Amino acid sequence: MEIMISRILRYLNGCLDDDHMYRIGNFIVKHYTQMQNYDLDTFLAEGHFRKSEFYDFVEHLGYDSFEKFQERLLADHALRLSQIHARMLNIDETSFLRHLDVTCTSEALLSLIDQICDMIFHKQRVVVVGALYPRSVSVDFQTDMITLGKEVVEYHQFDQNFRFGEDDLVVFITATGRTMESYVEELVDQGICAADILLITQNDKYREYKNLCADEVIHVLGKFDSLQFNYQTMMILDLIRVRYYQNY
Image (cartoon, rainbow, N blue to C red; front, side, top):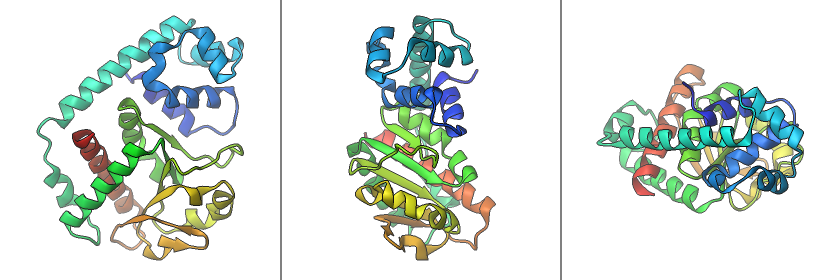
């Protein structure tokens, strides 16, 4: 059975409106590892939600009370933690490296991955930006990092209140660079330049594009092959979450 946070992420990542469902889901992602400290009144007050909005949210997930929803959320959190621990035991990083086709050496890539993990640890939030399918391959990364206590969200153009800050790490995923071209003006207006940016791309010229400059770049080899790029992106994100778990 799918765990609760994965169901919430599936909704959030396909969301089209900045409504109470979207805001409640994001609040849970932000406070996921503190959810045991909330009762209904505290949850509503801190999130500025109405009781009717909360019940609409949990009823879509099959629950009729805060307590039952919270119990399932906490049980699933413990289950996912145990699954992560079991998967990470004796994992062989060389199997990831053998399948990665990037411009740098394996040693340089691991060093860069460790730098990225350190950035993730010290940042308050990770924001994934990209086209629909490249973002979709990041869901397991998103789920595990949230389970480990890190807020990880996807950027949505419809969210006009979204603001980047210096405590954000942006993971910008674009094979050709078209997504960056489409988003750059509004991203700059929303303060993305204050954040640190990791760019994963096949098109190296986008490391510096207009006013958006990547702090770190993983250049995936290939000529805009979307299938290969998505596979490589998934492997890179898997390696990041493995190294993060091992080090932090």
